[in-house]
Length: 472
Image (cartoon, rainbow, N blue to C red):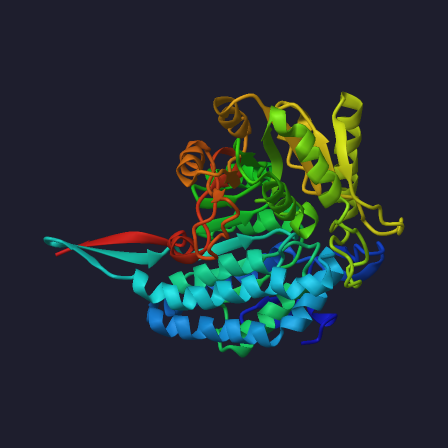
């Protein structure tokens, strides 16, 4: 792969072609704020070319037996695995994920998304017979996939692997903040033998390149991951063209600690999940709900644990948190915490501050807030925890559901039955009990302003399928 040249191009019809847009976008290194390269934005003509190629490739790819599609997708997983270190270098340089965590956190889940789709997909296409009617599953068609910067390879992989397994062809617009790993993916797909036109990539921003893609007449389905504000706009635009949309949006997930739960473990694990990827995770646990009478103990644990989240250069093996991905995100986080302090939020614990003023660093912090405070309602997307005390379990459930979002959550309890009962009352797409890990193929998606549709595993593939009935 010609690493720099490819970002001057678009990947269309199985090859790199020059992008013809008249705008270039700087790609920054968040560790020091420097511009590492310039990204050429695709023009409307480039988007049209990509969509036309995807539409032309659709009959052949959708007609390829599912088992044969699965073999190609499995080879993509293998090609990505072979490029794991290169991918991690690119993601660290553009997102700021600490390099010593990047393969595990950013690359391996993407490899799994392709390998899982290849093994799960073929069994989903069984036909159903209803007397003289035959019901079959068919791909929705050309899929436009638009992805964010926080997990720039994994978020792409969950969509693209599912779409390809379903028999869709894809035009992808990744985030302009972290494009290099997607260029590597395009080369991996070509090396795996994916037919030309089945997977296409156009670079650019949302308002120009993204909206040109959504409105193109060849696009049948739009899959988007990103902010709730952007998702609402995309849904509105797609609705004008009567196009189906899947949206995976923001979150403000609650970690509910019930009376008698292992408090130190609950607080520690909540911090780990809340501050993962410097808090730039839509499913991050960012509200800690604790009994009022345990607040002093909670603060003691927080003071000890938050101090261990060392913020520093992502190349340094001692850095627990790297910088935020963009200067705008850093400014947003610092603005929200400053406003919270002015409004009366109490700082319970703070981590060390990175001295490099040029990078996009913010310290880990935990604040005592009321349920309706901005810090307990707004998706911060940084290493900031809102601690909300509650009087009784009924109040705790109300607070957990007192959010416009509903993406993820956690419950901690000494009694598993009590934990399950509480989990079932929380209106959110995913709940972990007592730190249970999330299965990578369990469906993922949200309620309310966290969006609709599901990703991962069989459910993720089904998002790209629809039914056709044939009557004899």
